[in-house]
Length: 205
Image 1 (cartoon, rainbow, N blue to C red):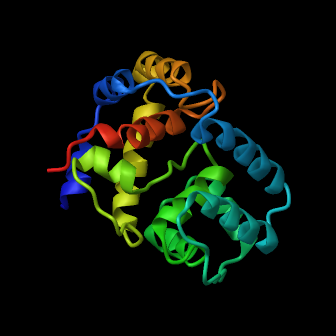
Image 2 (image 1 turned 45 degrees about the vertical axis):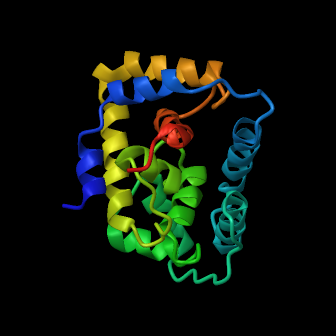
C-alpha cells in the first residue's frame, strides 16, 4: 500500500474539523466561491443533452481551473454508457482511465469533469488535496488513478455515514462563514474544499 492511500484510509471527520477551524476567512469575492456556483449550474444544464459535444465542452470548462489547455481529445466510449457510469458514481479503474483520455491523460482533469457532472459522488483531486493528506507535495498526479479511487471511496464513506451528519454540518457551516463554499454545496465538496484550502498551512516534510 502506498503512503497516500494509507493516509486516506485513516482520515476522520475530526481531522477535517481541525482543518476547517484553522482556515483564515476569505473575501466573499474570491474566485473559489464566485466561479464554482455558475460552473456547476452550467454543467447541470448541459448534461440534459449527454453527448460527445457536451462532454468535450465540459472537459474544456473544467480545464479552466487547470494550468494547461487540453491538447488531445480521445473520447472512445459511448456517451450514453458514460452517463450511466457517472450517474451511479463508477470508480472502476478502467472507466476512470477512459475518462482521462478526454482530459490530457490526467486523473486531476478527469476528477473535475466528473465532479461537475455528478457533484454528489465525485470529489476533485489535485496537488493541494494530496499535500494536505500526505503532508508533502507531489507535482505530477496525472496517473494517480488508484489514489483517486481510494480518496473518493473514503470521502464517500464519511459523507454517507449518518453518524457523521452533525460533524459535516459543522465543517460546512465554518467553510460557508469563511467564504470557501456556497451554502448550497454537496457534502463531498465540503470535505474536498477543506483539504484543498488547507494546503497552504501544511509544512512540507
